[in-house]
Amino acid sequence: MSPIRKPLDGTAIGLMILLCACWGMQQVAIKAASPFLHPVLQNGLRSLIAALLIVGVMRWRRQGFSFRDGRFWPGIGAGLLFSGEFLLVALGLLHTTASHMVVFLYTAPIFTALGLHLLVPGERLSFSQWSGVLLAFSGMALAFSNGFSTGVDPDMLLGDAFGVGAGMLWAGTTVLIRASVLSEAPPTQTLLYQLGVASLSLLATSAIMGYWRGADMNGIAWASLLFQGFVIAFASFLAWFWLLRRYLASRLSAFSFLTPLFGVALGVLLMNDPLDPRFVAGAVLVFAGIVLVNLRRG
Image 1 (cartoon, rainbow, N blue to C red):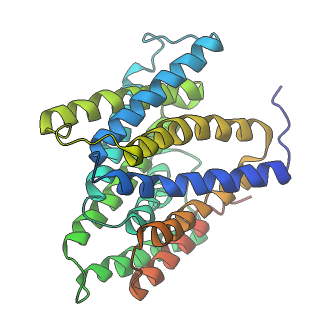
Image 2: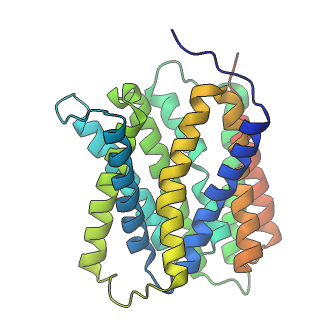
């Protein structure tokens, strides 16, 4: 018998706000440490740290793991998509601001809705959700046009494009999990596939491309790495699934829209990211579209 999920109380609301603030801080942390530790190397190391912690949790809980349960190839596929997402985020942050990256990365729900509409029965988009898709794409176009403004570094367009690509790969990961046998797998197993493949592929990429050279493990680099590995990829995951086991998922998801807002605000406050009026207007349209897309029927 499934446990009864509760409406949100003060504990759930406070924890969700804290989680959204942490998730919004992630791109800022990577960007801040990028002069000392290449972003691709950061993501490889943080994935390795989190994977080892997940293995520890699974052993503590005595959860089994098998490569012969029919989930291996979907798990590898999800891991490769996950790796590609963070590769594009890492490379994109070398060209654009943390504020831009968080907005374009969080277009993922739009691409997720389109993918589920095409591939998963029962996930067809309603008229209002299609309106949200069109609104979000209009916002993306408006936000992108900021890169053509006089005085704006045209290199930012490349970083913004990487952000959109990362959002598409994030959506692809979600759709693959939802449409495959991974949808019935324990969350720890699915995450372990993603983190394990990401750590191997991103660390291998760092070795091949020479991203290890010039690494300066100073206080900022260590703080970013530990924050990403322990807080983001491990602790926030456990907290999120703790909430999902106790509270209504639809109410929790509504709070997740705070994440890009925190990301933009923290980028401006901590990194002095500039905010062009067209980018702000485009971001508002993107957020409004995401809200419409996530208004489920019934």
